[in-house]
Length: 239
Image (tube, rainbow, N blue to C red; front, side, top):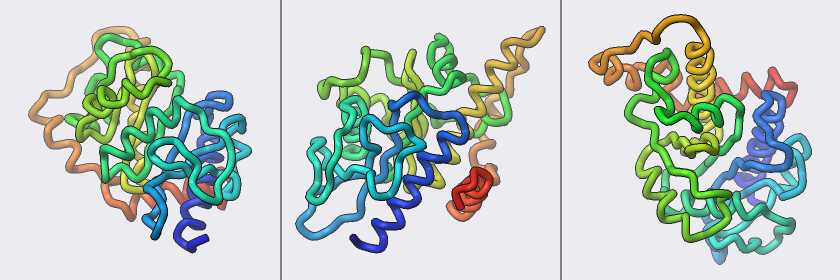
């Protein structure tokens, strides 16, 4: 195995275990995928968790490599959840920048996804996502490939997607960046729910301010994303 792929497998397996530590798991469901580097004679593909294992059981060795059609790549084995293939393969194929895709069914994310207004840009974290949150209408459990074009169209060029009545999804060029994007999105949802539970109306942020916020994010560089990711891995006892 190429050294680069070995490191990718290690980072991805650690990310699955970090999600478990953070409580972002859903039995044996949901997925974090990472596009594999190009290799001579190998179709474009990505790594995904084997179906049937909890996130805490994912290791670099048992990650499954599949192509964009869901077929196992040479040297790989294991079953893959069809819902994970339908969502992730569509985005990996359509977005060259989406090397990593993370999808969760957190309580806060599902709750906000089930509200008509979706995610409001009225708190510190949701303001960071202003102009970069897309929405995809619920069509049932995502197991039909005919939904893929609509899913891709809904995402467009956004890096954050609210799957209505379903959950949250983030894309990025690598694991640390995508993790940070999803964390901000999840935090924004948590604060929105807490705010809605409090007394009195919500204070809105003027559009003139919101338009400036995304560019001022301290965690906007890849180096900072890596520092955040490594710190969280250490906190979870994974490094």
